[in-house]
Length: 376
View 1: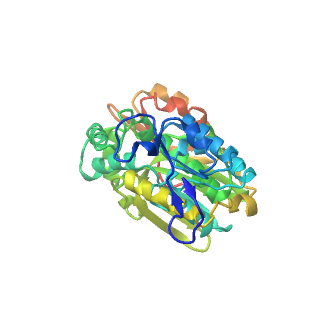
View 2 (view 1 turned 60 degrees about the horizontal axis):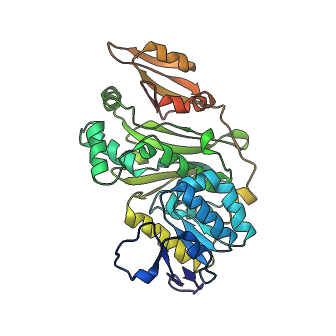
């Protein structure tokens, strides 16, 4: 793509489209190429739009593009979350722009808003439903009384979930988005390996019925929160959500983000977080922004820095289990409620985040369901 920096429209013209497979397409054959270097080595191209699903290939393409002094628009949340510091440094060193609004929350312009509107030291937290696939599944469970298995199958048939849905339902997609939002919220880059992410794949009818009896819905929620002494905590967990919360009514493949601050309390952003058109709209917005020479200033890191990731805090959780032996994996600081039934049991109490992070890869293999109560 060649962008001229015109003051109206995108000011850009597509020069070449790099694809994997050589098949007949609606555009002329000369518009396509099949090796990334054909674009990366073309001095007449000053902007790369990277929209592939492979994070390793995306890393190679984006890194080389920045090194070659080309602007980049990317939607690859995994690649960005795992390499954000390096990519920010490369963009700065080569005096180019790296934009990635489409990497988090689809059509919701949350990154740009965190950069431009919430560009001060008043932010307290960013909380939201960041994955449309898992939210679609949970919506069908709680609104249509469908089983988790049936809702997942329907999501796969509609293209909201992959044949291997772990990336969405186990919280990885939300995790990578949260890493990106944390940078633009508090100026801190956190490794995804160091953050708790646990999803909804182990949810049972017992957990669903428990939530219904209490008047809750279960949502998969990502949150970064400011603590005392310039510390922040972040995690991705299923959460019991009450009717008075904004995200209670976020349904289907939609995302919803609640931004909380000292002066403005809570503000809510809502929109489609999945699908080609919402993602395409975010990509187009970034391309248009390049026409105005826009680039992220990373204001929180440069002007309000000094925040530290704090893993030693506690969180109140609901832990459902069948075999009491599983409790040896968990250390409750305190327990406020527990139940023992013929098949299922649960405990509600406080656990330390770092203890859960230490076993996060093991959690999905255990016969349990873990959820934040949303109370603390």
